[in-house]
Image 1 (cartoon, helix red, strand yellow):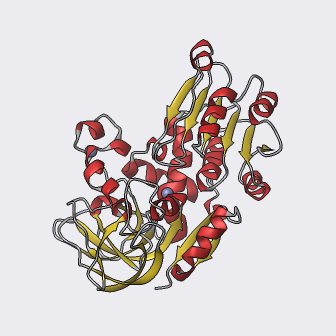
Image 2 (tube, protein in one colour; image 1 turned 45 degrees about the vertical axis):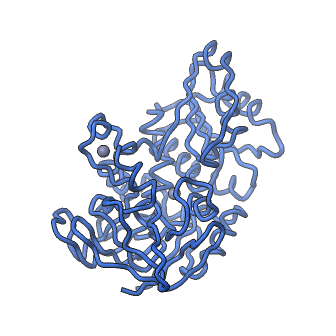
Image 3 (cartoon, helix red, strand yellow; image 1 turned 90 degrees about the vertical axis):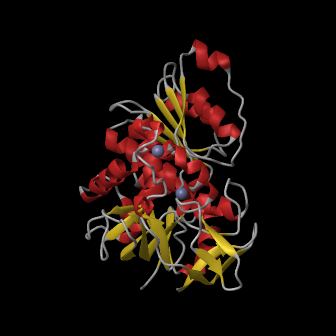
Length: 368
Ligand SMILES: [Zn+2]
Ligand SMILES: [Zn+2]
């Protein structure tokens, strides 16, 4: 079928054009998209900075309505509302069985190569160029074909935009707090970087009952979003020494420091700022490869923990529905996280607004 999608034919070449989508094969579903979140990873991908390279269709956060299902699909039926899970774990490999579903062994040859789970693609341009599916999902498209494992049913009262952002930014930010750090209430926490992931981490800290919750960013506009979503204090890293300020606001430093930026500078700051015995969690991926200096004196003599968190250490089929329920219970302010909606054609504007710090989270909406 003919569909309109946002794609990168080559590195740094973003176009919105009509392409061809093949029907779902066995274990796959066809979804009519309603919303797709705009994430920094999409930007890094079309610029060729992450593992999967163009040509590909962008997008990995999304939600929509199931239109058709292929053979052997048992958990999903046409008409179901679903959120996209871009970590379609096999749930049978030793890594999955150890509870590390976010690190499933099959991702290396499928999801991270931007292919569907059988290693092939259903997408091509009208001039015959095969396009990959970013993170096995390619959500910036009017219709998508995904594996059944990539579709998480959601209740019909949950807005599609909310379901879209739960699948990446919210899972990553909230998951880092509750799964990776296993944060405890009443302790001070800091979050470096206040984009979609950082703002979600702030909400995770609020949910757990951390106090104070200190937000760090270089843009005052983002610090304002942070305050609205649960930060009790803010630090503009352009004006203040972050480590000193954090150690002043929380005695000897925060118990937990979440770095949603992932640059060499912020990784060191997170580790330095955490209190003795405290935990620094690196959540953001600034580029595929960043080498940061780690002080052994800080790590060993102060008995700190330095943890990496990939998509909030989530177990997608358990944790994505849990996050949906936390939203429905009013515990996560996700309507407030979504500050602007765009038609698919305005994706370049959405990327610009994201980089300029004008929006907390932008979402593409499909009126179909
Ligand atoms: Zn993302
Ligand atoms: Zn697995």
